Image 1 (cartoon, rainbow, N blue to C red):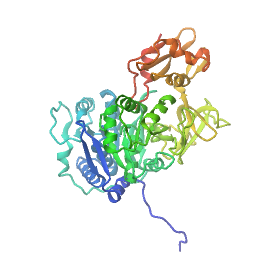
Image 2 (image 1 turned 120 degrees about the vertical axis):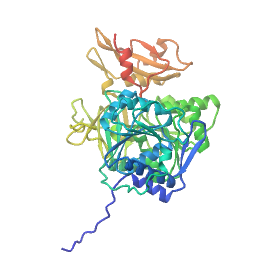
Image 3 (image 1 turned 180 degrees about the vertical axis):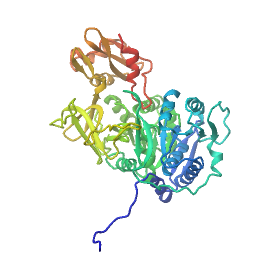
Image 4 (image 1 turned 90 degrees about the horizontal axis):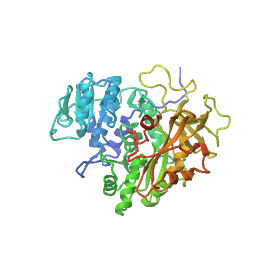
Length: 532
C-alpha cells in the first residue's frame, strides 16, 4: 500500500546529545573549575567529551551496564561533570549523593540504589570510606580531579583508585545514546526537610525537555554569550539542569568547587567575567556581605537566579541595588526535576514573594484540603498540585504512584496565583500551626520579621502547649545591627497578623540550621525547640 503521509526521523531525546552538540559546534567554549589554591582548571567541550567517553569505557570494563546505578559524592567540578555525562551517556543511572548528609544516611541511599561504584572528590575520600564501611555492595571508589597520589588513604573495604591514571588505557569506543529516551538517567533523593528522604528518578526524556524549558527567554534564558556560575550543587536535583543547559547552547560553565564563601565567589565572578549566577539565597547573601565589606564591584554580573528558600523583599532589593543585578526568583522541587516556575528576566519587580509563571510543559492547580480543585484559581489560597513532562509519577523503589489518576502531584505547598498567572508560595501545609483549633501560617509571620533590618533568617515553628495544643515561637539569626529586645522584633507584627498569631517566645540563634539545599531545617528546629 502506498503511504501518502510523510514522516520525521526518530531522534531519541537523550542527554548525551547536549555534550555531542557542544563538542561539535562550540568546541572551544570552556568549563572552568575553581581549585582550592585559588587557581582555575579549564577545558573545552570537545576534550571534555573525549574524557567522558573514556570514563564510560572504564565503567564498562568494570561491568557497568545500561540501567546500572553509579554514585557520585562530589562538588561542582570538571571531574564531576565528566562523570555525569559518562554515566548517563552510556545508559547507566547517575545517583548523586549529598556530602552534607551523614555516612549512615548516604549508606542507606546506596543500599537502595545498589550502586557498586562511587566517584568522589579528593577531600571527601574519608567520608566515602566511612560510607563503604556501611555499604557491603560498594566495591570501587574513583577519586576525581586528582593527579597526585593522595596524602593519606584511609582503610577502606572498597578499592580506592585515582581516576586519572586509569583513563590513559580506558577504551574510547563506547557507544553513547544506544537506548530509549524513556530510560532512567539520574537518581536524586529529596532533602528530607519534612520527612524521610525519598528517591526521585529522572529519565533522559524528562531531563531533555526540562533543559529546553529552562533555556526559554522567559525562564533562565541561558545563551552562548553567558558565563554561567553554577553555585547550586550538582547533587541538588542535577544542579537545576545547568550543566545540560550550558552544553546545549555552548555557554561557558563556571564551577566553584567546594568553596562557596563570599570572597571565593566574588573572586571567581571577577576573574571569569560571570554574567549569570544560580544558587540558593544564602550564597548570594554571603556574596553581598563580602562586596559591602570590601567595596568590590562586579561589573560583569547581570543576573542572579535563586530558589530553594524565600528571601525577604528588602534583602532582595539590597542585592539588586548593591550588586547591580536582576534577581530572578523561582520555585521548584526535586520531584519537578526541579524547575516549576521562574520569574522572567524581562519583567519588572512584582509583589513580594512572587516566584514567576510556569513555562510550557508545567501546569499548576490549586485545591482544597481534600484535594478537590478550587472553583476559582486566581486570587485565592489553596494546596498546590503540579503535573508535566518532568514531574514525578512514582518514587524510587515504591509501587504506588505519587501522582493521582489525572497526573497531579501534591507538592505540600500552600500557594496563590494572581490574575497574571504569577505564583506565590504562601507556606508549607506541614508547617501550619494549629492553635486552639485555628490555623496559623508561619510563612506570613516570617515574611514580616525577615524584612526587618538586621534579620538574616527567620523561622516560626509550633511548640507544644497544654492549653492551646501548639503555640508559635520565633527563631532568628541576626546581624550585629539587629534589634536587641524581643518587643522590637515582634512589634512590626501588630496590625499585620492576628494578635493571637504573634509568637510567644523569641530564640536568637548564632547560626540557623540549614538543610543541604539551603532551606531552613525545620525538622531540626522542631526537634530542639518544639517540645514544652
